[in-house]
Length: 266
Length: 256
Ligand SMILES: Nc1ncnc2c1ncn2[C@@H]1O[C@H](COP(=O)(O)OP(=O)(O)OP(=O)(O)O)[C@@H](O)[C@H]1O
Ligand SMILES: [Mg+2]
Image (cartoon, rainbow over all chains, first blue to last red; front, side):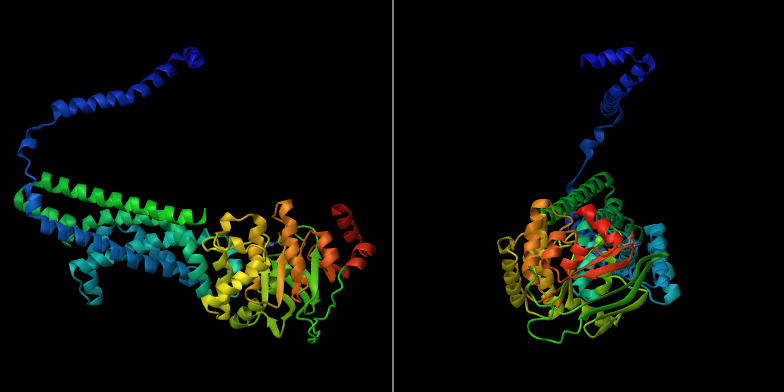
């Protein structure tokens, strides 16, 4: 410590002052925050809060939550299945097929979910003559778009499998299907758990934009309740809390899943 | 030392099981195999030595279709490579391979590593295949590790599992690509001992190796590769004592 101070004293005064400022920055910000909370916020709203709306609309909120979880889970499952198929096809030695997949992934990745949602709901019926319910449109938009991200994740996982594993499977006379099912995909899956969980969390939250079409998931329900009761603070505080709890559970589940795979093979 | 006859003891035809004629292989413009001819009879043990980059791995890998080749002829049993996809699978079930870096499946137990291929490639039931795995693992001396994962084993143990795994498909031929080169010195012998015992069972073995003692003792013939060419091949006594080729004697004096 003594020599540290010596060096600081010998350094240019400008540098020392800068360092001192950087060190006290959190304290300054902290004090500012406290001051704002004490004098800047009009705390009187607290006495007017009425969380009984949550209880009153619990059934609707629960249905919204179920819809959120269901549409996220189902669309990601379909997305993952598509992604595995695309990742397999990307390994085929037929260049045009690979280009198509690259194009598909790029397009879906660059288009915002809302735009994809509106396009599927309003443009697709005109183009194909098949019209979908808002829920189906939301499901399709999320499945297609997540499949693009998941294709990248699965492909990266597959590429991370060492060449020796492919050699060993080939040398034992495995068919292509068996090689993928027994050797490549199980190992790739282990690698892609973290990115998979990130994507899942992202879509769990992103499903709230489906409220723009009133798909009936949690945010749609919350918007309706808030508009009807004029109690946005209570409603959205509660909904934020629900997203938080579910998001955190997902992270925890991922952690456990990773550990499970980890302990199995030291 | 090698008192075993070259022809198989069961008196099968001694027509070579593996025949290579003038095999050439290019990686882009680089010629990794410059016309290699080699044949191996059933039950024969052939060791191939040579400096790094001389094409030993490439040669072995063309024999089970892991690498394609560009010219010449390779015949395994009664299949001319490259055959149809189905024929390649057949050849691979007759020609097992043991790799320098083991390449065990890390997400499966030792038992499953060995039992998987018999189930998938030979149509055994899991019960039969597990029994076979147990027998083979006993034979290579690691049956007590059967429920562990490869990552929990030493290098020597892993390579012995890899040998058991290759044997589980009941191949006619085993290719060894420097099976002891990535092992710590104290584990080399345990693997060589397994290979020595294997050599006396009548299975055909092609072994790329730097273990001269093993080659001298176990091989029926020893070949020397350099720069993509099989320069010299002869029974071990003649090979090591006469050193017919200048490059061979330079190589041997460097490593012996
Ligand atoms: N996939 C590849 N692409 C390009 N060149 C390659 C490839 N594989 C091997 N080679 C080249 O072919 C030559 C022969 O390689 P090979 O691995 O067969 O040698 P080796 O005798 O097995 O050597 P080592 O003792 O180092 O294993 C080397 O010069 C190597 O650089
Ligand atoms: Mg090699």
